[in-house]
Image (cartoon, rainbow, N blue to C red; front, side, top):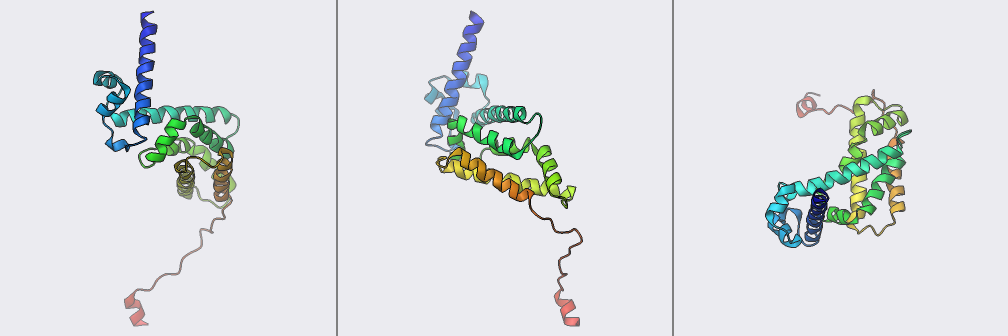
Length: 208
């Protein structure tokens, strides 16, 4: 009974600390929130906070990583037999809508978080494999650049949706994001033999 009581107390403490952070982020930026603010909001003492977290940023990233892990696990389960862009995006958007308190936090601190980058980057090998399979002329050494383009574009699309309070239906955002990635997968690559005209410097121009 004693252990179960401690488990319940721990769960309660973690929940009120998390809730306090989300509530404070409604009116303050992450960088301006202190441990004292969280303790006052959660009605706990500083010792309770430091039992679980090093500081506010540690709390933020622990929450972030737990949701990234959950998202990746769900997407992996759906992709056991065959990876697809559709499953990746659908899983990501579903996690965003499920964790609405965290999503509102993203809207106020988009630069502070690596949440979306973390999910998509976890599937970098599968996405690069998909790119190489769909873009015949894509050199392997160029695939990283294409991946970074997909990553940045998809993250910006979803962050834009979050910042507008997700008023656009989730299914529509899935379609838009999938269409963006597929447009990259359908791009034509310039032949590697193509060269840009060499620019003449001023000395060469004078000698001609």
